[in-house]
Every structure is written in structure tokens, then in C-alpha cells.
Length: 334
Image (cartoon, rainbow, N blue to C red; front, side):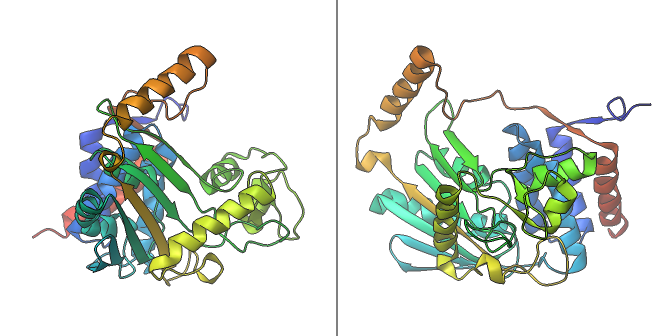
């Protein structure tokens, strides 16, 4: 039977239950499990499976090996009216976000603009998870996160910064429009997938351990990814990092690996929320009209909406990994 024929198609409600059980089986609390499952399902619905179910084993391994605190209780404080700070306590950024998002939304509606800063968290995962949540509540959203050192800054030949993604979303009754992209020429998960499939990568994507351009994804994983656009992408990556660590997160070069060892990377996440009502109540409608005009008259699409997926497709190995961890959760039940 071919790999394609044996792929497992699973409805998203069933996948949510499986992911929740898998996280608990790997050592996470119910709150951590719910936060990670919600982020996983959201990524699948938005058509980003590489940061959906396929990414969950990275969290499971981190829980099992001790670099992710599965029983973290995020600490929230509001030192000023428009600032919400959350110490993730070496847990997931998703759980820390859940702890602080209501305060962020309330502050943005009161002040017009508000910021949520998260420190000491694990890798943030799909940033659209955060911006869409804010935009679904009628606010403009920006998010910046740093990662463990995976990318060379312009002029460097070793990994000194992260892939450092950024995301943006604007609200609309039909659903948010926005983007979520890394500062690297290609996302780290794409390099890993190419290595697993034995496929070459373009030479502009990464350097090997000797600082030379490579088309070998295995060599790239031992070297450093490259920023998109040379110095321009490098500058954006460092801007993202400097904002992401505002709440005390580690600089990327100081962060522990997210995929090995037993130390937390203690990363950062920055989310800004802007209330368009404070500027122009017609803003969402004007934006939607403008974006439709660009698409209709010029073929330029921004934040194109897709029909939400109703199910996910998992490889046999991924399904086995999730069900194995979930079985441990069920075996621990009284």
C-alpha cells in the first residue's frame, strides 16, 4: 500500500480530542492540552498543516524531555493601562496568550491601542493563531515572535538569530485578512520536511556548517537558514526579535534549542491590538473594499480567505505518534 493510500483523514473535532489526549499523555496539564489543541485545529482550518498537527510532535517531545513545562501557570500583570505582561513560566506561548488575551482586548478597546508581551515561553508556533484571535474580536493585530538560533543575520555565517516570524490581521465580518510569515527565505519546517523526503532545496535558503550555500537540507539543518531579501530580511528579523523579547524573553542566540535537550528556550512574543473604531468606524469596510478592488482590477490578493478545512490528513507515522501519546493519557485515568 502506498504512503498516499494509507494517509489518515480525520474530522477536526476528532483531531482536537486526539491532540488533547496526546498532550496530556506526554505530560501536559488539561489547560496546556486545550491551548495546544486549539492552536493545532486553527492552523489546520487555515490551511497550514505544517504548523498544525504535523508540528504537535515537537511539543510532545519537549514535554517528554523536559524543555517544556506542561503544568505552567502563567503570571499576568498590567503595569500600565495599555500594557499586559505575561510570564509563561517556561510553558507554551499559547497558554500564556490565553491567560492575557482578555486583558489585551479590554485595554485596546479602552485605550485604542494595547500591547501584550509574553516572556519565558516555548516556541510560539503559528502566529496567525494570535492575530486571528484578536482580529476576530474586531481589532487590528500585529504579532512578533523570536525562536531559537536557526538563521544567519546578513554578514554572518552561523545561526545568530531566529526565523522570527511576524503576522498581521485586519478584522471583517466575513473573517480576518492577514499574513503570517517568517523572516527566513524558507520556514524551518520546510527544510526539515525536505530532509525527511530526501529532496534538494534552493541554494538561497540556507548555509551548511561551514557557512557555504547548500542545496542539501540535511546540511542546512546543521548550518543556518538565510533571511529573505538579504540585508532587508535580516533587519526585519532583528526588529522582530527586539520587539519579541520586550517582556523578558531570551535573545535567540542565547535560547536553548526547541528540539533537543531539557532546557526551556524561554522565548518571547509581542502582540499589539489596535481598535479601528478609535480612528474610523468605517475602516474595516474601506479595507475590504480596497482589497477586493486590488484583486478584481489588478489580480493582487492579500490575505485571501479560504474555506475552513473540516478535516485533516495525517501521515501514518504522525497518526501513530499522536495515538501512542493519547493511549498513555487514557492508561493513566483511574
